[in-house]
Image 1 (cartoon, rainbow, N blue to C red):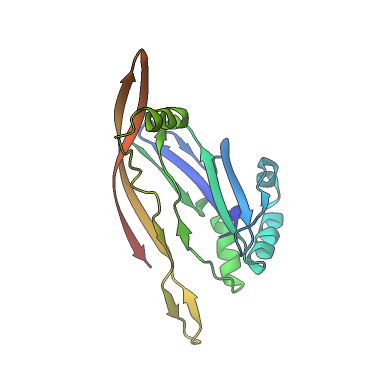
Image 2: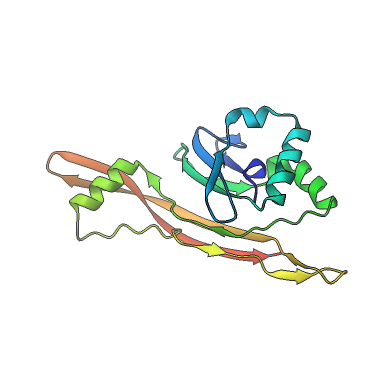
Length: 191
């Protein structure tokens, strides 16, 4: 998927609803071999929708992908975050009408809640403790289906993760570290 049409959206029970969150989250445009071509900039989001659509067409013609990396802040209340194309639904629909087909293949390298420095310190200080990150390494590829003309096209993938972040405290000497360990489950559906 091209970076220009993927967005990270946040929503919680306090009424917060943010779309296309950037902050310390970076989207790296990837070549078909996985090499970083460029990093999406905030000013790219201020372009005219037609400019974004033309850029996405080029990215799709070049078979570019996207690596989303970084961190973002969430409130300690029930809510969700999702990576989707909602914010750019109009562009996605126009491109689909023009015959473009999207590849929803993905791989999750790492997801955690808490301060990375605290995780690193806990890992180094408590050698017998294995901090698991249950979403790490999950991946999926689309199922291909034939359309009316006999073309094999990728089907949509929707993966729903259900996470519970459990507060965990670690003490060593006078230092105290606070992180969240995840309990999770997920389901994948192909539409």
